[in-house]
Length: 172
Image 1 (cartoon, rainbow, N blue to C red):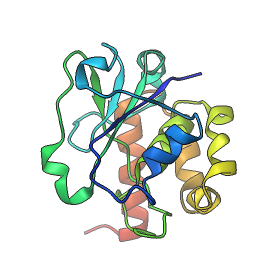
Image 2 (tube, rainbow, N blue to C red):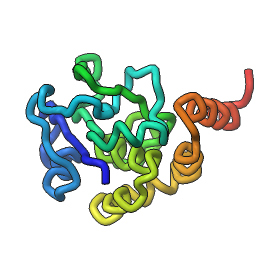
Image 3 (cartoon, rainbow, N blue to C red):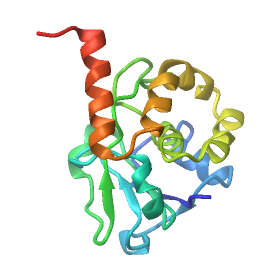
Image 4 (cartoon, rainbow, N blue to C red):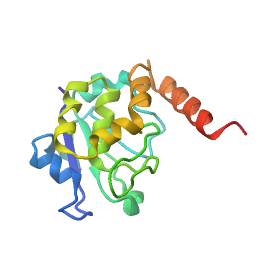
């Protein structure tokens, strides 16, 4: 089991906040300060140059960290000392606000996708019971998530992502 750590920047509507729902359902624990995030943990960051892969599972055992903040404030993404920043590969949002938009996942979608990539499918199944968009997220991203979860490392995840994007966008 991977500990889910949530650092909530309190920027979204509390009634719609998936981070608050994860805390309410006991899916994650809150890190009120950045220093409360365990050293060596994996921080999901849209600015990382390294893609999340199954090879990160060992680091994720120290914690999988999601920074709950709005996409409009993403430039204020905090740095966590001693953490391993990883970016999620290409995935489509299934939440009602950003449905179908690539890479604009809410916090729960990011954690859900990351758990599948890291090989923690049983832990990820909790999201199916708690979030009404979870099955749609799997419908939109299931085959890609399966491919990512079989990758050996970050480079292979990026290769899979690029091949997928070429297949849907066509080659220039």
